Amino acid sequence: MSKQPEQILENQLIEQLQKLGYGMVHITNETELIDNLKNQIEKHNNVKFSSSEFEKVLNILSKGSVFEKAKTLREKQHIVRDNGDNLYFEFIQTEHWCQNQFQVTHQVTVEGNTSDSYRNRYDVTLLINGLPLVQIELKRRGLELKEAFNQINRYQRHSFGANSALFQYIQLFVISNGVNTKYYANNRYQSFKQTFYWTDKENKRLTNILNGFTSEFLEPCHISKMICKYIVLNETNKIFMVLRPYQFYAVEALIDKVMHSRKNGYVWHTTGSGKTLTSFKASQILTALPKVKKVVFVVDRKDLDYQTNKEFNSFSKGCIDGTDNTKQLVKQFADDTKLIVTTIQKLNTAISKKQYQGKMEKMQDERIVFIFDECHRSQFGDTHNRIKHFFNNPQMFGFTGTPIFADNAAKNELGKRTTKDLFGDCLHKYVITDAIKDENVLKFSVEYVGRYKKVETHHDASATEIDIEVEDIDTKELMESPVRLEKISNYILAHHKRKTHNQEFTGMFCVNGVETLIKYYDILHKKKEAGEHNLKIATIFSFAANEEDADANGFLPEELSVVEDPVPCMA
Image (tube, rainbow, N blue to C red; front, side, top):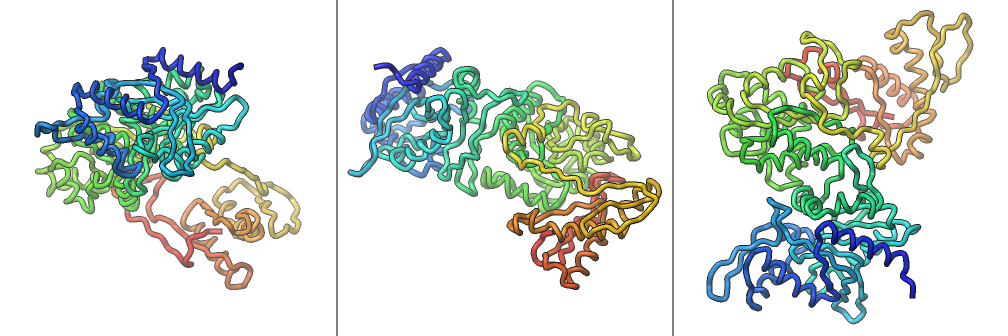
């Protein structure tokens, strides 16, 4: 009987994996899986277990949920031997991730515990130290990847948790129809939207499992590094998350800079692409480096300080002791806190005020890595220079979705400065076009409504026509014209239901300044009182210059919000 295309793909994949260094092992059932596990753990730890001792090992492996087992996998383990001695061992080497045992098997069959259980046979399984940590599900060319995704979900329901439940230790799934290949983390609530293509450093996809993906992503050292370094355990939701390729390359580039140079750099990742997770993982890895005394993650607004603390602690519970005030920040610089999250204002105060100089000066010669979130907002004034001049060994990295280049640099008393001027080279780029292609952000839908024209005669305009007639090019007069603001307000009211899918969504209306915002609010509020609409309107603004940062001295006033109606929705 001739082989089906899926079988041919499976055989070709296994052959390629063997060439990469995986040892082929024939495992058909759970008993053989456990026997192989015992041999591999013994080999990895250079120890021999008696039957009773290995039962204790299996008892450790059997406990907990998928999330708890992910922790067990990474923790040092202990049993009492038959002779009463203590034995410490590990399931995986996380610091030297290449120093693990790599095997490949296929068509392992597992049956559930109950009489009506399903009997499942898995395509290709990658074993690390005998544990099934990567499961690859293949479909023949032409079938949708969603079919492989759905099949893995069935395995999770029917048999991954059966018997010894060793398949609950899977960290990553790979689904492929040969031409298209994606990966994702093992979680309770799977979403196809959380499946990712792997790419190269330039964000070029490697989709063919036999031509690029396997040699790059499934190469033993790389897949082990992904599991050991680039999976984040989210304590809040009790799930684990794997980094996307652009996040991986950004962290790798940043770590390389710290390991092999004293140069700075910045990461250009578009808004909404997960910069917080990227910066957390970079910070977490950096804190483990002996040469780094502290990692300081700096944000530019107080509300971000709380939000970042919350997000960081969700990735690793208790990893951050939030800095509520400058005194607490100075204390963290002096104690053994490795990762600090603070605002640019408090950092500026800590290095500028005489009352803190005694404690802060003790840190001047230490190797400190600073990571600035949205670095273009707060780093174009005196504060940046103060930090550079105060610390003798700082290394500074910026994350931004909107870097400043020469053609869009605003000028202040320090002159025109770009992101490159402050931070050096761009370490990695993932721009809005990349994010749209990957469906990581919503697509743009741009409409041009109305136009500006110079005319000699006047005519009546409809309520939704936004043509404004001006005699000269006076931008301020044009943009703040009461006629223009009135017509735009009418246009919003006329089209709000259509644009928001019958008010299923809300809308945000961005304007050029506080004065204009107040004028719009007054217009819309009067129209509401007149019964022309019943929309809930809110205004959010800051008294401080944000993007332009006119003075840019590092001391930004607190942001204020004025909300008239209970729901923050600007039409």
